[in-house]
Image 1 (cartoon, rainbow, N blue to C red):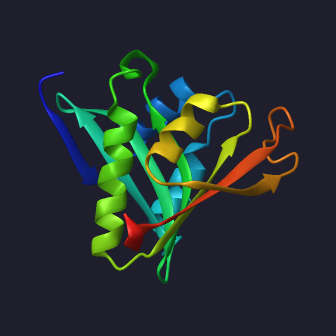
Image 2 (image 1 turned 90 degrees about the vertical axis):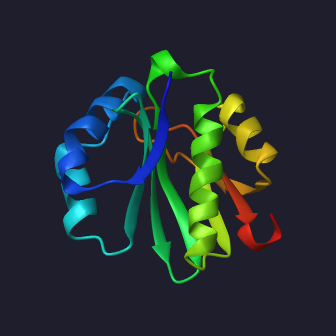
Length: 151
């Protein structure tokens, strides 16, 4: 891992993002879903993580007024454990602050204690539970929030 870079996603990045998505999730988003995010959803933004010139992760979000809702976060399995997810989240939080966002929220599987620990370390607080949130297995989601202007 010589070079780590962050940039906003463009339509031409969909193949690379799909590869990360399919390697990361049991029920990955479809190409059509990402195409819609890039062409129709005026609120969608995706921060890409590139390692040595290749897409290695991404953070998708919807920015509505001053509130950001993280829709999905992934790092390719072979690069997990190197603090890349944390670096990406710190970068997206900084970029959102510069765009005027004051709050950020996300859902995380109740069983995903590693991600919950990462988010808590970044200042997120537990907000509530969304019952049967995940369609692949009906698992509940923990809703987490952070005030970006207090970081």
